[in-house]
Image 1 (cartoon, helix red, strand yellow):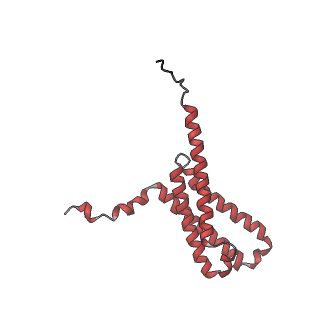
Image 2: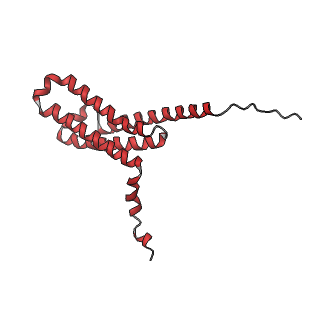
Image 3: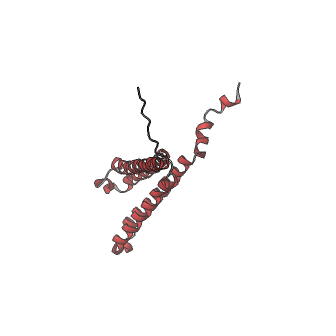
Length: 152
């Protein structure tokens, strides 16, 4: 019996060595941590209520910076950018679902599926935009060759 056939599941585990999934998981965990901290501070620390606007701006800015990690890391590969960002956003959406259990009014404004779709569409838009920019760059590098007509 071949040793490779016994360890068939190991290949899936080793796929975490791929930077696409690794960056996506890192992004998802950090987005979840910031989102959880934001939610707990907003609902459990009444001393910061007078700084609500500043608190919300700081948390939203932090989330945007963290969301840009896959975008900046994979500028050369729009597919990897989309996959990594969507994996991270899916983990953040799972955190949102778990927070809905502790904060029942959280889904009154936006449900977990809406949150996931918001992030997936944002990453999809950025991936398509990056793809178009990469195509334009590639087209500019190629020399323009005049086509010769055949005379019959």
